[in-house]
Image: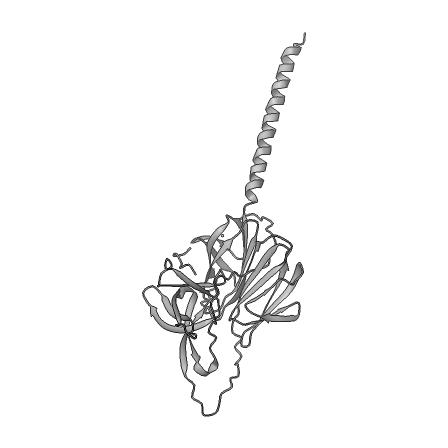
Length: 329
């Protein structure tokens, strides 16, 4: 004779166990999805291929794509070549949740002979499409969809959402072209580094005029699109102003031990003395310019300048990648 009460008790036990497992699985899937939403995407491409280091740890080789924890990271690329020595590349970028940052690099034998671009974007809300372009050298011509739009540093909110062709050109340098995707509600920033084309740029000289050279400090490309001017040669010193990549300022002196330069970041004006400050040598260098060639000294440093880049929200690929601490720009 069948024992129905016993069978019903077993059935209820099985149902309760299955229900509990379902709840646990559902909760786990929810948490996994929740935490993945906070990831930040990164894509690194280079020519030739290179080893990728993030936070001083080798994480792979180019092309490299992964989802990482949001925040500031130092990315270093070491080209993989045996026939000639190429200059490695290092930059500091800020990874934002739900956003992909793209780093591209074409290696040369020196930093000057190398080229590349860094594309990133951040959510600003609303329906406005915002694009910013910063170039090294400064004042490069910006063309969008075949139309000349201005010179770097360039910013616009007049573009429509969608794909656009962006071309950067400067006399004596090779053009660089990329396709960007503008998205409503996002600020897109592109930082370009152009390489010399090898062509001689004609110079006009007045007959009989002797040219004199002057030492200037040129601001290099930074992850933030600007470099802080400090009261003294230290990253903890008071911030006096911000200067942009490509700008040049009169050289005053330097701290060779800590690699800092003292510059005149604002020239003397009526009733006011010239303003001086320090910039780190990590993101600046000495250059010689002809006095008669109108060196590009920054008129007035901006208080705060933030570059922008265009990308598409991260699709969350499967993860596959700081040397010694660097000075804050």
